[in-house]
Length: 114
Image (tube, rainbow, N blue to C red; front, side):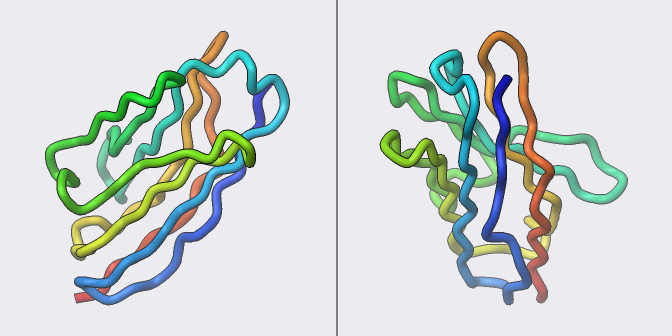
């Protein structure tokens, strides 16, 4: 089993920045990739960014150039640095880990005001 705990969400004005953190615990040696998804009201959950065990990263087109995913292996933590935030980035952001199966965090709310 893998447990994921997110933090760092909040309210920010358009153009501002936030950094989300996701701490993994449990059977972390089984994790092959981690990522961030988001879900806005009335919309499906969508991939934002992911990072593999080897360090390869991938981003959704709508965040390229604004968001950066990174990790600290010593702290078992994955980060999502979000810059130039837009009101349409408002959503609940979920941490995801892929190992023997998929694991999800509880989510953290990000609200961007115009």
